[in-house]
Image 1: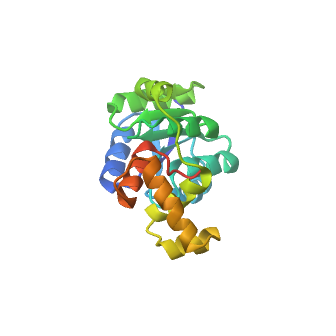
Image 2: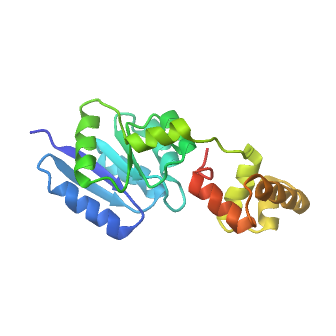
Length: 206
């Protein structure tokens, strides 16, 4: 019997340990590494050379899709299955651009995850139907690339002066961008704009 070697990347420890335990119940699946951040994915993958990497989209630091993109270059033979609670269409489009092998909602029954692992290793691509429907019906981000950069830094906790220095802009220009962003997203304020954009998946690194 061929055993599928899996690397599991999920920042919530309880969820990560539960998923690992459930996968280990299968005779043909072995979890060879568990990590809690996007930065750790690449190092762990290099050390363990997994057949499949299961990675959560939203993780601290390096997001799951950026980690997947770098992993695709670093270990092209490893398959990638992305887990998400998001149904944002642009997140799915980015996953497609990265050429991940599967895209599954995290609240799916565990048997769906197990089947997805086996189907991917059999050469298939797997996507949750509800995610495909969201991509069909959803809207793209209304933010320009620069506006997304500003809001992404704000979401990470940067103040106006820090954003200005990082993007080589004046503080006044950053404030103007933020005013435009709040208006575009029909948000109440900066924090509401961050929430709206994050929920829609518009703050993932491009």
